[in-house]
Length: 336
Ligand code: AHM
Ligand code: MG
Image 1 (cartoon, rainbow, N blue to C red):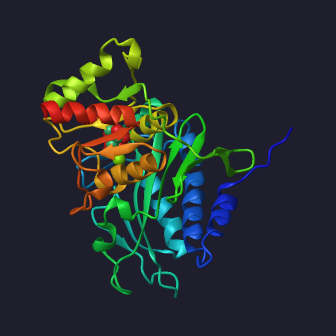
Image 2: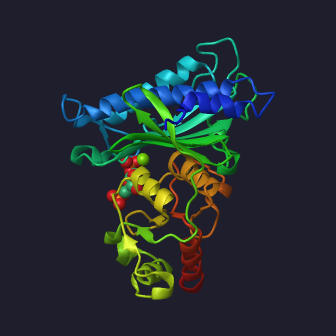
Image 3: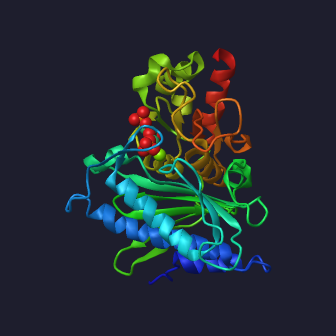
């Protein structure tokens, strides 16, 4: 029996039909990001074959070494997004400041804003572990002709769409436009993202915890006790839970999204306000998690309710299945 293939572009055009007033401009932007992801996939796949691996020799605004593939992913995404003409401003992990595109290419005023981490987890490139692209889309809030940082510094709850691309054993794009979460696997033989994981739900009873336990001794007492809880034996709740940590947010999040679990990057001595970035790492993942039935907090507040003040702002991050997020909260409330 053969199944009908639904490509990413067909899917988003179909979805757009639910909004009679839509002009197809978000569809264009999403399909441009999908096209960029295919080009990035091609480079990621040959990373070990050509001399693209290794450091570019420069340092980005976070003080981290920029890898060649990070740079490639950044310019590829920006190229596609600019040419599409639907985006007024781009914020990227790789750029110190926002990139204003308004009026650059088209006479139509762009109405969207993109925040992205073009290639997250790039320290995993050299060991051939999964890396990913994370993106978030907002409606601009500025008046025409004035696009800028304010358009990007919106609460995560204002996101119109968010997604990530995981460059794993296959390439997959996971997307939400605020109406559930769907996953598309790239079929290299036809060069299309095909709907492979419709209506993804995060199990309410997750059994995996993902955290860099090297930092255990600098976690708060509540976080430590929660980790201890995950390791205790208790047949009623299926504990001990499995520990799984790749050190690549997209890969760790993706596994937990599909299997049920919790990912945490709490504050540590080295990273007192956490390591991950609110605008282009935590917000898109939080939106996807909530759309799949999970939750995301900084330990006290819902991630999507935090108003960013800085483009590269960091935040403690916990995201996952309901049972584990509840238990984390209980432990944080009791022990801080
Ligand atoms: P990056 O944006 O420089 O790639 O860093 C973010 C990565 C995440 O993918 C991952 O969750 C985290 O850093 C891992 O950090 P650590 O190595 O401290 O556990
Ligand atoms: Mg990153």
